[in-house]
Image: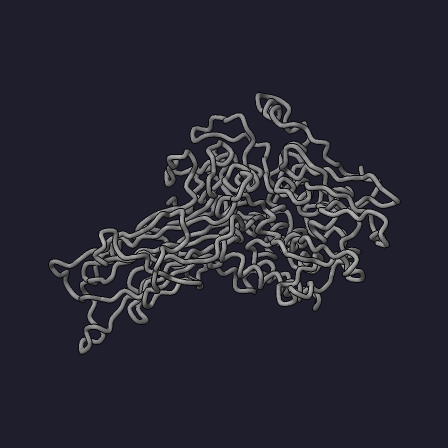
Length: 615
């Protein structure tokens, strides 16, 4: 949810030293309510021409008709997301002035803001057209904004031949027998830039950020920094490794028709981009689909299918296990490396109620032996244990310790989210944890390396004593992610004294069985059990053969590990470091895009919440 900053009423900034904090940010010519002479053309008027079949040589690829792809995305449904409105209700309670929630609407329903309905705090206050979310012309009429952030967009209002041109990568010069398109077109590289995405995906509130002692840092609270994380990463550097937000969230296609009725006339053989606009908010898309029309349901299904593939590109796992195990001695030093393959922190965006964590479960047959962070579908939460490894941004109001209050947050109690590749140090984007240390090149690591140690179980007996060679310990490691935790949804219900949005949200989640975690990466292998009972003398331990944690490719000549699966492939990377063949290093080998996984929207439990463990 976007909040306010440069566009906030100056009354909020009046008085005290805090009035000086806006001095470092240039004022952009942002479009304000009721300023447009030419209103945004409704998105459904784009549907007829921009819903078409793929080019013949891409007939089996995912459908990339722009309107159809957009319709099933969270961008198109940003204004009808029930979690958003439950969060807006809490924000309205915490606001110093009623206007403080307007930038939430500015991001999630540009039309509502531009037409003077930016003070809405419930879905019922929007018109039918407002509910189209981030619609076509909100982007295709947007003009470059310096600096980006807080939805301070500038909308082109200069009409040509009675219509404001749509900005994009192509022009249609007259002549050569080519008829003009039904609307004017203007070539503008801004539409394909990460900076356009940064318009809404960097958010600063006007609460001064403070340190652990409550001392002001002279800057607004950096509530979201998805764009800044990318801009300070290796992916923003021009060259072979460059990748923008669009590189992952709007994949390129080699050929695209330009219009359903004039496919050959307006075809773009030089390439185009799908309007998938994917994130990881699967559960809310499912909730919206349950109330959708047949045609919209097809668009939602399209997005869900692509989303399931997309989230698997966000991270890779590398797991190191022993060749064998003595159950009486335990499982010592189970090595795990989680690598962030996106162009921003993992996870990124709105932090409230969003948690990623590692689940480790070992089994002997149907019996669980050792676990950490095990997901419990009955309680809709994870197991709390001493080795639990979570990845989250925990923002609080420093003076009270309350969290889930976006407009009151002023302190990062922790930020253990994994940095993107090559992230350079900076106050706005640094992790807030001792977990990560700067690399020799002065950048933050884009991986987290840890190990688990589980105590021996000498009381366990061989379930098949007549065959001592048939027993194996199954080891499962999963990287799990929940966008809206049960704790947060219950907070949105319990603390809402404004309307029914929170109560309705909790009832909807409960009826739908709550949001299961997404599996971003996983690994499974079977370790031969060498003995049961008391520890044996002279047993061998594991040898760590972990390779470069930043390299997600398997080593040359690698072979499959018997019993191991990792989503795409599990490999044995060449044995131990000293060549004696003990120990193995296994990793998931998912395709590795240069950037990806935009993850935005809401979260919250104040005084009644259970403090999440710092790991």
